[in-house]
Figure 1 (tube, rainbow, N blue to C red):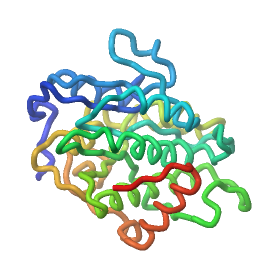
Figure 2: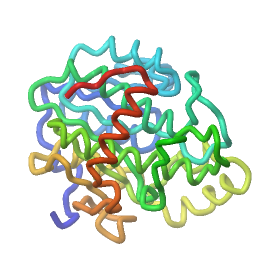
Figure 3: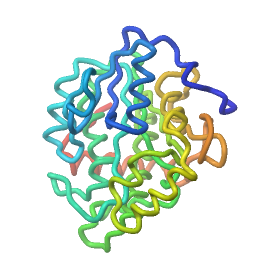
Figure 4: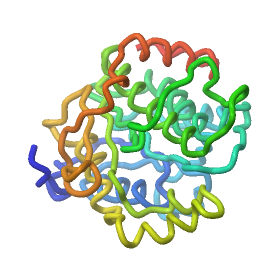
Length: 280
């Protein structure tokens, strides 16, 4: 794969059902539109369904596991699940169940959603989990993933959650699921400006138009992972140039994320924290 793959290469998806989280703007909106444009029925998981009129939008708040369960219960079956929604660099806050916001939304919410939807998968179903190039700066503190006993860092918590996305996606593959991890490189979206505050938000507003590639390009790794017949389970797909810009290619995650023992521990901790068993 050379990075030349484009949305026009998406195969016909007629009769397929795709569940995509976080479709009200940015990458999620592009992913959903491209899948629908190739014939898929797209179920939009969004906090405010009114924000995406004219489509099958259902309320999904990844910061509340009760809402996640309700959303999952409304889905009869799926061929593609794109775990795209995320938050970045907010001040310290907690989800309804008391998890640190970024770990709770970016990882635990999607872990719970995938676990609850798993029995409803159709033959050949695949799961795409969106990570970030910033996973490379992260580490998983499974003794205190929710920053209950250590100093909070917005950047550190984000990197941890994105590291967890990679570890989860690879562990799902090891357990027999069709699972591909993707990341968009540096793509322009509200992610860099809606979560951060103060200087962090100001930096995002300056950097995005200068260095960020369009969401239509940033979405390509996830679209390739979700639809391309040649996408390989257990692979990690990102942009071709410095993992920041360009079309999709297979890239290498940080080496520690491949640790099978770490994957097992994260899985067990995630089941314990969410109270949701996930047997694959």
